[in-house]
Amino acid sequence: MQFSGLQYRRWQQASLVGLLITILTGCQRPESGQQPGMFQLPMEYLYLMQTPLPAQLPVPVQGVKPQQIADTWGAARSQGRSHEGVDIFAKRGTPVLSTTEGMVMSVGINTLGGNVVWVLGPDMSRHYYAHLESYGQFKKGDWIKAGDVIGYVGNSGNARTTPPHLHYGIYRNAEGAINPYPYLSRK
Ligand SMILES: [Zn+2]
Image 1 (spheres, rainbow, N blue to C red):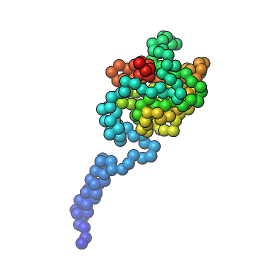
Image 2: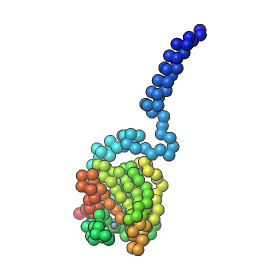
Image 3: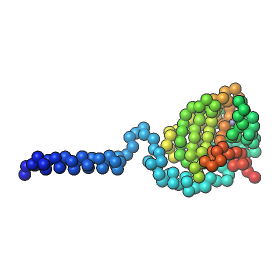
Image 4: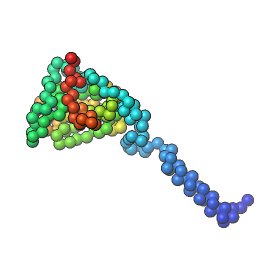
């Protein structure tokens, strides 16, 4: 059977519609190098939204005990800033361990923090690990567990004149930065 001119055009249109549906419904996996986001990993986001942040978290530097940490929340810092985290001193290269499970949101460099990692944790809390010497084996978008290596203690960023330490911060959506010290100390 031969296509008439009209039938051929209809067939072309149907193919085009099929192709558009395929593209719009996105039946392909993300290209390599594309970062998974809220729409690629909705189950992980839902899980983090529904999981409460534990009241006690492990100390994020290997071998450091809660009693060795000082509460320096609110202490004065340069340019009128106040300290929005806790500093945990340790030998350069000591492993920094994630306090929570969650998703790596960012791995990068900033002026104050130097080499930093952000993790999205339970109840959408954000965990900030700064002044790292180097990073662990993961990339943005990866899922990590509590105790996984975030990186290694250093003094990058504005800590280059101080002994190596981890600056650890916790941020909540409603309150912004909160004091991590009560989460790390054992009452
Ligand atoms: Zn600090």
